[in-house]
Length: 412
Ligand SMILES: *Cc1c(COP(=O)(O)O)cnc(C)c1O
Image 1 (cartoon, rainbow, N blue to C red):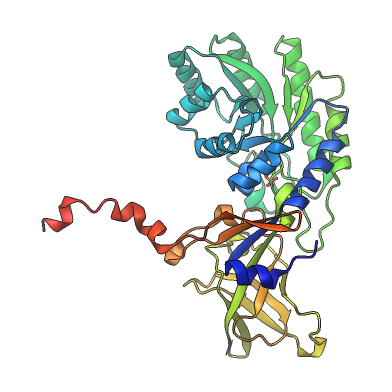
Image 2 (spheres, rainbow, N blue to C red):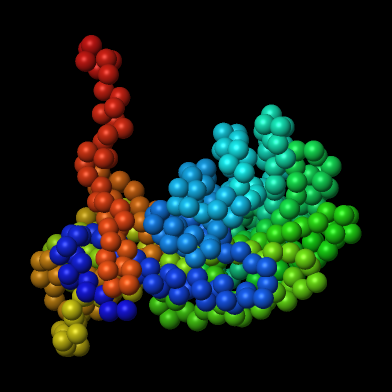
């Protein structure tokens, strides 16, 4: 897709997030087709990019939602995701969240500990309901990804061991307030190798067979998310190869195949546009200071993540003019950078810089650090641009503080 970055930066100002909705649709369809002929559900991991319009776009194509807080469940419902396609995961659900999820009658709550199961049972009992649940199994598999985004090893906080899961299913089966309908695992993010997924699928499929022998019928085989994408030059797993592994593992089981991709659908649909403020040199090192910062996109600081960075309209720059530069933001942290040793031409004030692969864990992880308003978001649909989130203003940031400005200070 040919995007006129300069025109959009002119129209909406910077920093600005752009999402190519046609790309998101293409990715979704590819994955859905890879599972064709099977009962399948793709529940989008809302945390990757939680904009309601992004969720709605996916919901309109039939996607469900994988949520990790009641806030995300509410977003999914507000975006029009069918309640029976919503899963509520996460290691630490509060009673109120459990209650609301049960009242909303979503597909299932994904449980991550025995203690949580007891809470869910209690809340369901209070409501006179039967909670549909799945259990997140930790298959103890090294996903061969960055340790911060690895989740399927016993050393990680997620899920329960197979034996514990089995005990939980047996308990749940007997409880009048729990209905065990699913099994779940998610071994990590940015997975680029198929073997760990295959191994995990095998372990969990065996569990489903064991449960069947105990007359516990699992209906949803949820293989989590984590499909990797190309940020730099990574070779990734194709939708077909992925689906084939899952289909093969679940052969003979009468289950709906469920997956929860986040970044696979949105990462490379997104661009963060930012303008150059200044250039400076420190002891021979070149710094390009831009108007976006780590509060807008924290992945480089948090995960040492690579993002491709280019100057917009740089087609006619000569190679000889390029020198290495660190691209940094205005926030008062040394970790506030987007790229190091990036080859760039000399850049004047207001030169436009494009940060790629910013559609997942970009805006959704952004903050108001340094009292910076969050960026605006724009959807690109069929050659048209639509504002899907206004730029945050100072008044928005301080509103909840000023709302507390009642008697106590003034009386001093
Ligand atoms: C984060 C997460 C996902 C999505 O991860 P991606 O790498 O964005 O695909 C899916 N499922 C669970 C349980 C998660 O925690």
